[in-house]
Image 1 (cartoon, rainbow, N blue to C red):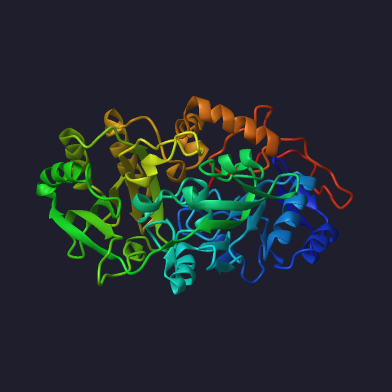
Image 2: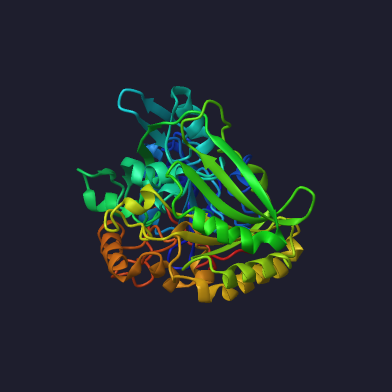
Amino acid sequence: MANTEIATMTGRQIVLNSDVIEQFHSGLRGGHLLRGDDGYEAARKIYNAMIDRRPAIIARCAGAADVIAAVNFARNNGLLVSVRGGGHNVSGNAVCDGGLMIDLSPMKSVRVDLQGKAVHAEAGVTWGEFDRETQAFGLATTGGLVSTTGIAGLTLGGGLGWLMGNYGLACDNLISVDVVTADGRLLTASKSRNEDLFWGLRGGGGNFGIATSFEFQLHPVRPMLGGILIHRLDKAAEAIKFYDEFTRTSPDELGTFVGFVTSPEGERVMAIFVSYNGAIEEGERIQRMMDDGFPAGRQNYWKSNFLKGLDTQAINVIIDHVAKAPSPHSAVAIEQFSGAVNRVSINDTAFNHRGARYNLLIVGIWTDAAAKADNVRWVRELWDAMAPYSSGGVYVNYLGQEADEGAERVKSAYGPEKYARLVALKQKYDPTNLFRLNQNIKPSAAKGGPAEARTKYETVINPTPRLYSAGPR
């Protein structure tokens, strides 16, 4: 096994002796991958084809013990760290360039507690895999709109889903979370254990540690009714006006959102996606209803904001820009918040948008890498044009990288009071900002990361400092 050049948190490159790499490998049940190894290319690729980064080492974690070993290895050597779950990660934060990627996607255990109507699921599970196991018992919980979304990232940021009108967000259904913190401890966070951490994990993202396992409350959910209502684009403003009035009094069982999409015939249309979790004799399962519109391997660039409302001017801005979208795969979604989501107290969780009615999501999706500039420009222009209609808040799961969004955008996801509380929590559990490749909340004492750790296994081949960029190549 050869020496390995790897990026550190300070931006320098170091070279780890082959002995330390071998020792690290022998301590992992799931093993690790280096550049050139079989399986490396598949392991480094994620849903968004626009992300093309190459970690120096990929730790393929088989369980919590592997995660602990990887965290200790990263901390002791001062390494740049990214964490990958089992799902999309459109922002690309899951894959670092030149550092250590801690890959949780092999962790797929799902265990249903039928008596307690609860489930324990590991961090590499997707919502489709989760539903398959829980639906065997006629049970489910709120979890995503697309079956290939990972349970970890979605839940830690809040967690929208078809069932949120009935049961709240995914994070509202958490009973406990097992977390590996920056100092290598495995903690359980719940309402009775490490309560401050539990509060922060429900909306604060991956800032405070690596969540290895989630325990969710389950609910009886039998076959549901789902479908799509299609309107021509020239009728969209009229349809939206009716939709806005109708959803003000619609029952919790009805979950909806609006999408400006391309029909199978190639026409730009407005679609209302509908699910109903009521007492019906027959229905259709809907968790995969959106999958065809979100295949892996396409270029993705998303931006989002919460809306003040759905007035006619705002809808006309969307219609005008949708008609000029450079890619037929791009879309605009208006997501409805209602029911149990709004009834949870604003201070119960880090998620901060309990009073919202609608969220705007602009989804740029295209296939030709050479078309990036046109498609990114379209997303940004529409987002800028919708600024007058924005509430100023943003859903943290839809934020891109800090270099693109800016640090203030992370603050807008929480508001000043909650953000200050989250900073204090970060200072307690991750004072050196080891977990920084996320929608980052910096600890109060962070000054760019700790000094590099030097171990007896490290060999510096080129001692000249070298700049390191975490951005795409």
